[in-house]
Structures are given as structure tokens and as C-alpha cells.
Image: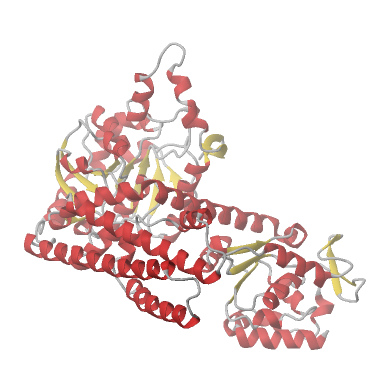
Length: 612
């Protein structure tokens, strides 16, 4: 066994010198097999080594290599480029995978170093260490494993997790699986959202594009409120308990209100300092429609419903766009200020407070749950709409049921340790806050209500304790004056904007011409006799390769991608096509579809711009 141990140790040390240094005490052992207290090592029927842990077999007692190879073969799927091993026993499956697919990425996850190095004493791991792309997540916190897996691409990874091989750290691996599932859902949600709303986003952005030449960005406030507390106002049911104190809260902090909570604030007679609206849908605009807040600053994004820019307020400011069109203009005209993407407008509000420099952030109405089976604060657009459609046979209580149970309702825990009804969507939002807070340890975040879903990193606080703080009216005025003193000079002139806008239209036109040229080449090839020579096909590929490189190098391809079919949609369209049996013809038809979709996407962008 010493020869296997020495071979693995040398390979591991050469490939991962930093890890080897971190775990030098394990590598210093001279006879690793004799120091494995947790495994009962035995021979399988075929003579290979297998083992049990707590009486449970880790691998086949007949032929562990064959078992692992079959597992690997069954795991493969089209587009798979990586494999993630949550636990591995003695390591037969990672070794089999490395041998079967040496060009793919391997991610090995193991919280207990003793188990990892024990495996190196028993079977040959050198095929794993020889993989060009191999990641060993050894004794890492569960949260840090996910970014490593994301690098490999969660949607393109095969996952291996055997209960007997993870039982020694069940809670750890359960946490990793939950985080992986959340990321999978995030990717699925992002894809579904893109498919549903991409045209709306593009239409709104094109209608609002001139705002880049008129408005300041949120970065005019960056870092200027380092000594000021901020209060985030969301529209959860618990906000009702805080509304009577809202005027006093405004005296003691900068109030950042999400769009859904604005009506409640106005009902309490308090105009927020800032209002945040980022959702591009018309229904998001309805939350502020008909209201006015002449002393408030409206923070928004270029993709919102255009009527948002007619909301009566003191000032509009833009956050950096999440979409390629806005990002292109910002690259030319200057950044507006990134408020990130966390799935909910409340996350953007928290990010703004952090960007402004605040390290003391309070939250009201950030429930992310249904405390006492309530869905929204009284008087909100959602709540009022249910009442407006209420009839005797379908009362408001019935109308609220879809909100309560439409997104995989489940129970979580509130800040008092009591169960509270929530759903998978809001748990995703809570997870964003948890991750964001963990990455910003200098910022302290508190909540005024214990009834909401408990988020690690947020501390409950009594409203009376907050109200004991001194008023900061003077300091707030200084913050606004200093931030907005240069207002109007931070954005480009109209002449600069028009020049960039002309460049934008010309770039799209150039991309369209390139794709149209490639489209014509494919059409011509498909109309040619099927007996065309191999040299003709080679010439076709060479001509298309030049055009492909030109498209790939265009800074406008990402813009067209917003209304280009998603990978899932493109696969569906290809599957629906009757591709020729001839592989050459099939490749030509596939290419024609791609170029046709590029032309359609670019043409759609150009049409929307022309209607601006």
C-alpha cells in the first residue's frame, strides 16, 4: 500500500502544492492504511479493495471498478463538460470518470481531510490528478463550494452523491445539495424569465435609451453616506406595525422605499428619500401610478416601463443596466452605478444603501414570508386588487390563496424560532440576502419585525431602541447637497449622446449585413446539387468561418442575443426541423437556422430603435 500512497502523495503534491502545504500533517504519514479508524478495509470478489463505514458498504463487494464505470456511463448527457463528486468513498468513481473523460472538469468536494487522504492510501488516483482541469474543494465551507461549481457550469455538470459515501458529513453535504438546487433553480428561472420578457426588455430599453443622455447615475451618491443609517422599506405584512413610526424613522435615517411599499408610505404621510423601481413590467409601474412624491428621488433602470419616467418626483437617477444595450451605452458614456441583481427590488434597495456608504441598514416589511397567512401590507396594489375583484362567492381571502400556494409553499423559521409560511421563490430572495450580507461583513443589517423569515446576518431590533437614536436631519441635507452638487455635469451632452447613438445604429446594421451574408451563403449551398464536391463544402466552411469570427468579434452580438432564442429554445427549433439525412446538408441547415435567427434578432432591435 505504501507504493500507492507514495505515488498518490507525489502526484497530489506536484499538482496542488498549496493544498499539500495546508495539509502537510496528513501527507507526512508513512503508512496511511494503518491509520484509517473509520473504514473496515476488505477485498472484493475480484481482488480489488473495498470498504465499509459504520457497517455500510462504500462500493461493490464484487467489482467496484465495473460498478463505478457503469455509474459514470449512465451519468453522461449531451452538453456535459464537468463532473461534481460530493463524497467519493475510496475514489473509484472519480478515477473512472477521469479515465473516461480526461478533457472534462472534475470537482471533488470533501469536508473531512482524513477521508480524502485515506482514499489516497488505497487506490491509484493519478488519473484524477492528471486531468487538465481538476478542482479539489477540501475542507471548504459549503458556501464557498458553489462558486467553484459555477465555474464549471452547473447546467453542464454531472453530479455524483452516494448516501453511504456522504454519511460521515451528512449535514455538510445536505447543505451543499440545497445550495446546488438553489443555483439550478436560479439558472432555470433566469432562462424562463429571459424567454418570457426579453422582447419587453428590449422594447422598453429602446424607448428609454435617450435617458442615458439626460440623467445622472446612482454613483453620484456613492460613498457619501458613510456615517448615516439607512432604512429599507419593503411591502411585507409586518410593515403595517411600523407605519405609525415612519415619520420618526425618517428623521433618524435615510429611507429607501421599494415600489410596492410606496402607497403604504404615502398613506402614512411620509415621502421616502429614495424610491426604487426596476421591474420592466407594466404591473410594476402600477404600484406608483397615480401617486406623486415631489421630495423623493426615483432610482430606476433603463428597461422599466416608459411611463415610470413621468412619475412626479424631485429627481430621477439611473442604476447600471443589467442588459447588453444599456451596458454598451454605459461603456461609451460612463457607468451609472451597479445595484446588482438579487431577484427582488428589495435587494437593489439594500445594494443602494451599501453603495451610498451606509454600514448600518434597517429593514421594515422585509418578511419574505406570509406571517399570519398575510401576503402584503394593507393598501398595497396587490391587496387592493384582490378586494376590487372580491365577490360573495370568491371573497378576498380566497383570492389570496394563489399568492400563498403558487410557488411551492413550505415552512421556514422566523426570528423568534417559530414556523412561518413562505415559498421557494422567497427563499431564493432570502438566500441572496444571506450571501450578500456574508460578503459585506462591515455592514450591519437589522429588522424591525421578528415575524418574517429569518435571514442569517440580519439581527432583529426593537423599534423603541431605534427611536432612541438622535435625529440626523442636518446630516441628511448635507448628504444630498454634496451628492447632487455636480448634478447635470456627470452625464454626457446631447451632442455626445447623439454621436454614440449613431454609432450604435451603425454597429447593429453592420452585424445584420454580416449575418445576412452568411445566411445567403447557406441558402446557396442548400440549393446546390447534393453531389457537390467535398472541396466545395470545405470552401463553404472556410467562408463561413471568416464571417463567424466577424460576428463573434462584434460588440453588438450580445445586444442581439437579448432577443435571440435561448439555448433551450434553439435546441427545440432544431429538434423540430426535418434535417437532411446527409450530415453535410444537416450541418448547412443548422447553420442557416442560426444565421436566420441572428438576422431576425438584429432586425427586431433596429425596428424598435427606428420607432423610438
